[in-house]
Image 1 (cartoon, rainbow, N blue to C red):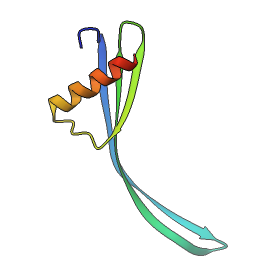
Image 2 (cartoon, rainbow, N blue to C red):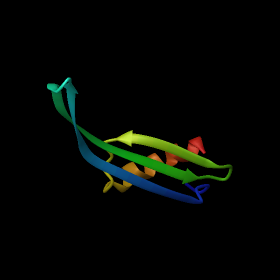
Image 3 (cartoon, helix red, strand yellow):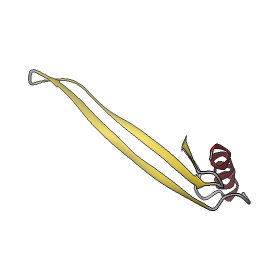
Image 4 (cartoon, one colour):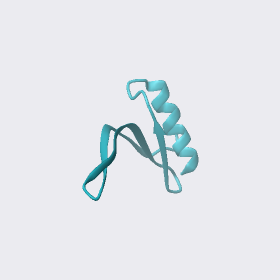
Length: 74
């Protein structure tokens, strides 16, 4: 992480409910849950972006590993 000049981690958790209606008749309905993280790293040559599902943001080891992976993409 010595070459990392800046990084941030953004987490989004939530649910989406969708209802399919065809000619006034409900065809189907459902709920989807999501838990995503986006890691953005500024390295010596540019930006690296990485997305992951189900990240434990409280785990320093996991966050450091994700930052290092995004730095390799930068």
